Length: 156
Image 1: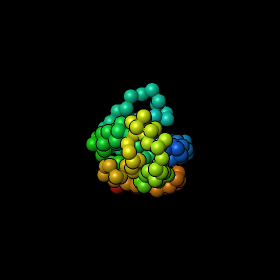
Image 2 (image 1 turned 45 degrees about the vertical axis):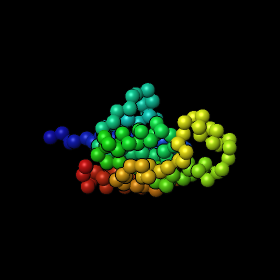
Image 3 (image 1 turned 90 degrees about the horizontal axis):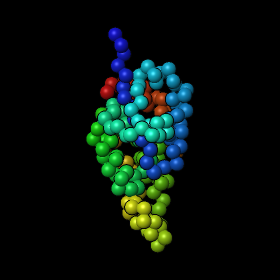
Image 4 (image 1 turned 90 degrees about the vertical axis):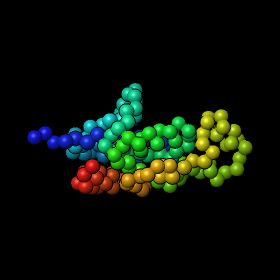
């Protein structure tokens, strides 16, 4: 009998993408395990030209929400993912991506309006329900590996 593979997507919002770099490192270090258990549904860093397809078993999200487009997208991801995993400080606390929230500066307000940003940068968990959190800036490869294996063992 063929083993069931889970669909997994990786999304990145407002961040330095350090967590995604460590996810790529995890993929490289755990390639056999990954291929035996997962099929990538979406990952911009690997599949830049592919359209976003929602509806995965596991959605892994890094970064804070800073625009109306991101706000809409995280709600769509949550609606369609069985499990949502927030990785990194930006996704969980909003910081350090939310530093502009604490500045009262006319120039910042100008660019927030010009680029249609939200008035305040918020964490993912301020917007949608998160099933798992993995703190770090960036996350460690080892902790990501442990979390993914726990999710599989628990079942989806």
